Image 1 (cartoon, rainbow, N blue to C red):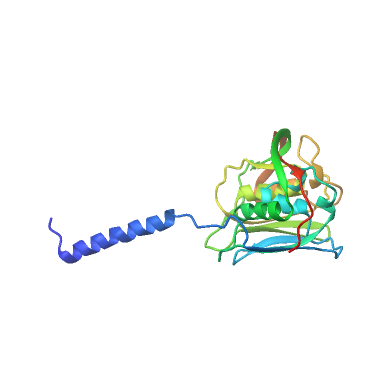
Image 2 (image 1 turned 120 degrees about the horizontal axis):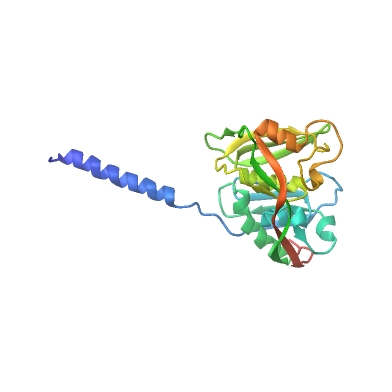
Amino acid sequence: MKLSTGALFVLVFGAIAAASSQAQQAVPRAVPRSFDVASIKPNQTGSDSRRAGASPGGMFTASNVSLRLLMSRAFGVAEFQIEGGPSWVDGDKYDVAARADTSLEMSREELRPCLQALLAKRFRLRTHRQTKTGSVYSLVAAKNGPKLREHSGGGASGIGASSESGKADIAGTKATMARLAEYLSGQGGRPVIDNTGLRGEYDFRVEWAPDETAAPPGPPAGDLTAPLSGPSIFTALQEQLGLKLEATKGPIEIIVIDSVEKPSAN
């Protein structure tokens, strides 16, 4: 069959456009490995509230945070998985404002090398990693399956938490189960490993009483439990999200502080 010149042009142009589109999709977005500018100042308010997060324009800000919390964000582990160092690693609090050379809002994973570089430069932080076997939670789908709403559309991903009047909640937007497991690790006093097999991005909300005594079978539940009325995190996850936390043994990554100094001046 002989194609007309116009048809041939459309066919060739369409093939080039498709190849170009595939090439653009295959190229990962460029993410900085360090901050261009950063300010670290002591916070002496004495407040109990603290926050840390990213925003568009390569911004990272933190208020009233300890070095241990910054390390938790930098290395992707819970605060109890950081060992060693002087007492001021927990006692001293800081405000941080940093900017990387990008217009994007960086995810937690993308922020990690930037935070690691900042801590190495300003706190002279030196660490090494260890792995040991200990008590962990396995996050799995409950018997009747997960009750999660898959995210649709764009927007930034994230998980936030709040607590008021004896209740606590976690709200996730475009969040993975791996991210939920990481967040629960910080709440539970032991690592949580994602064994759900779910690879999508989800919107969810779960509410519980943070001081409830109920716990799953197995070793003591740690900080996720203690006395009050209302569902425990274990019950809430199962009833509201169709997920379970099962106590077990597993590998725990530890970040050991070899040396550290109070931060240099801005």
